[in-house]
Length: 91
Length: 412
Image (spheres, rainbow over the protein chains, first blue to last red):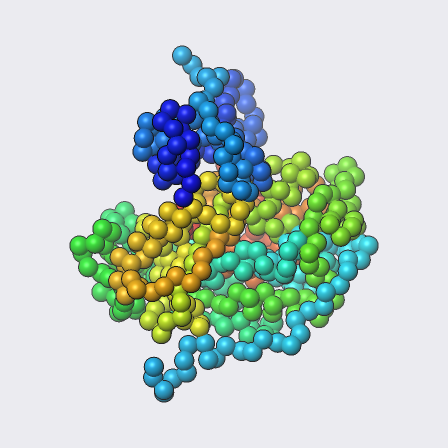
């Protein structure tokens, strides 16, 4: 079991976290104009690299906040974790 | 130990003296299959047997059948919900039933039945629905109550005061297990005899492309020309497709499994539980073979997180108290490629002579002969076999998904 560094709480055990897939998937700016293929890519298609991957994790058993982590999918090592950028979020 | 019956494993055949040649790659082939696991080898076999295509290479980056084929839990069943899945998995099961004769090689196919447990009211409804759907597709299936489950598998705990009590199970008597290495070797020997080149230690590192055709495969052992390329690389399919600039909705995850030390025969069937994420059978030699759900995160590392094993063991010991003092012998992970609807992706790619067979998630082994048969047809005819046509890549655009999360039995 490895420690994951929550940007708010610090290092915690892996079991406290929930995986959320690829990070920074923005909702389409003009949804009504999307083709079926573009909708398919937004809903179903994600990158699947063997190597560095930016992904979302939630500290679900702690502060319950989402953050972005860069992790190597081959070695499973986390190289960074950071609070998510606010792009694409309506405030 | 009883002296009247053979000890576990006594009926295992001897290893053969000779398996297959180990050729260097030729300059060009009619068909280059990328991936020397079960699916790639079965595809090669049926290309020869059903279509007379023998100028074929199977490229394997490691050793033959040393990836997921060597790491799987060998379960074979066809009790899927939807007609599309039932068709391909039942086609496969029928081929399993005659495979030993076809290959002229022992594969130790043992039809000992599978119980898929239900633990909640909703599990019961879903299970009964699946049984009825199976029957409509001519697949053997029945719904059993807890006492009947206990009759088939006496060591199971059907007490009502455990955390997830057994409320019943679906039962497919024709389901079974086979000896995975022997299956691979059987296909490999047949293909090798027919002139197929099985090329190991040959990693595909790229492709040469001319317009919408691929003209060759770049490998760690040099460039190889090709008429058609068939991708059978399971968890690493995304890596190959990246070389072609093609995206597919695949996510690779570690799927862990483990075996116990050798035990007397105690577990006569296969038991799976979707809800508590454990499935168990007893191998021919006597190991308890146990699988879990996939690890949640993407991974290519052929290992997974320890807490998955911990949960899996907790579930196993609650369902089978007799396992409590069994020792774990070894654990491992395969890399499974998971799709959004838990069904495979088979057929055309944007390149006219490249076909893909991927996305089997946790269900690839049971499909081995069936997909080999249908993928060989697809390659030989340039069009998907009717059984695999519903599993085209464009279903994610048309919306015609084949949602098998319920029948896939292991949480994706």
